[in-house]
Structure formats: C-alpha cells, structure tokens
Image (tube, rainbow, N blue to C red; front, side, top):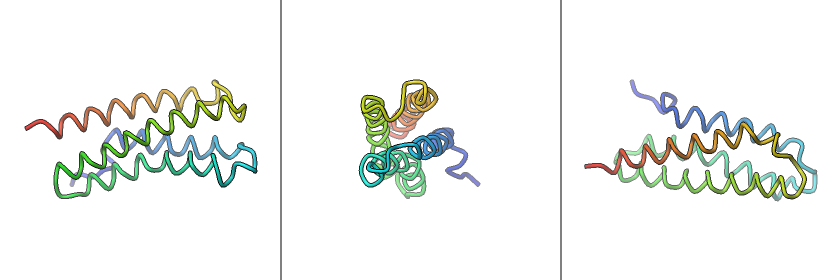
Amino acid sequence: MANYKNLIAWQKAHKLALLIYKLTESFPRHEQFALTTQLRRAVLSIPTNIVEGYNRKSKKEFVHFIDIALGSVAEVEYLLEFSVDLGYINEADIKESKMLIVEVGKLLWSIQKSQLQP
C-alpha cells in the first residue's frame, strides 16, 4: 500500500524539521515565543502539508497542499537567514538545512508539476 512515508520529499522534509528543531534549541530564551516558534511552525508545516495533501481525494487538493508546503519552504529559508543575521546561528550551523531546503523545494515543485499534467 502506498504511503506518504515513501515520498522522498516527505522523508527529506521530516529530516529538515528535526534539524531545525534541534538548531533552535540554542536560540535565546527571549525568542522562545517569537522567532523560535515561528521557525518551528514553518518547518513543521512542510511535512505536515505533504501528509495532508497526500491523503486528500483529488489531485487538485494535493497540489493545493504542496503549494502551501512550498510557501513554508521559502519561509524557513528566510527565517534561517534572519537568524544568522541576528547572530543566533552561523552559516556553518545551517549548511545541511540549506541543502535540504533546496532539495525539498525541487522535489515539491516536481510533485506539483507531475500532478498538474493531464
């Protein structure tokens, strides 16, 4: 039986979420309910929307949730750069995350494109 866990996009998005959760543990306490929460919610939105879309009944709905996941990919990318600019983390800290962001984005675009073809 097909399962969302078989999707490489989900596997990599899940790995990205785990990385970001661990990375944000070092953020300043005063960011606990601001940047930390925003970044965690955005990164968790990626695999969550893949799962929700995968389990919908129509291609149109699946594409909609993939589109939301793509928006979250862009949000995470920006929030990581913002975190670097604030000095909470450095470029070396986010090297693997940045590679996963690119991979997940490409995979989601590919899924979206394949679902939109007649």
